[in-house]
Length: 121
Image (cartoon, rainbow, N blue to C red; front, top):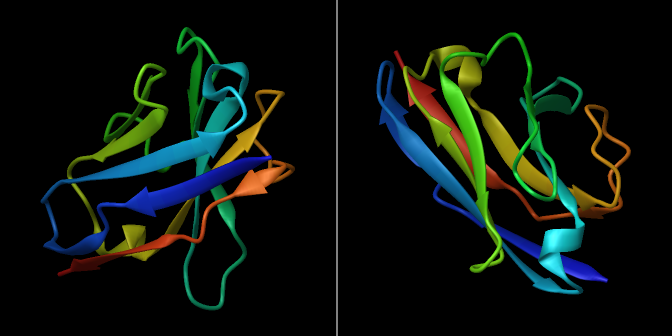
């Protein structure tokens, strides 16, 4: 079992930056690939970024490529999402997720409770 807790969300103006964190507890964090997802009101949850257990491989949705960076610190059991050049369409609840396999879909085994990101125009 893996428990995930996101933090770092908030209100930011367009063009600004936020860094989300996801702290993990439970089984060995470094064994898991990690992903970030988001869900805007009235929309389905969508993939944002993913990172392999070692950090060697990363994947991004086209909509965030070049603006967002996923990283992890296995010593701190934490995965991060650095979000730059934020746009109003980035407004959503952001979730982190963990799975043994590196995935770009939503089939992750473990999920956090989410953190709200609101980007004002």
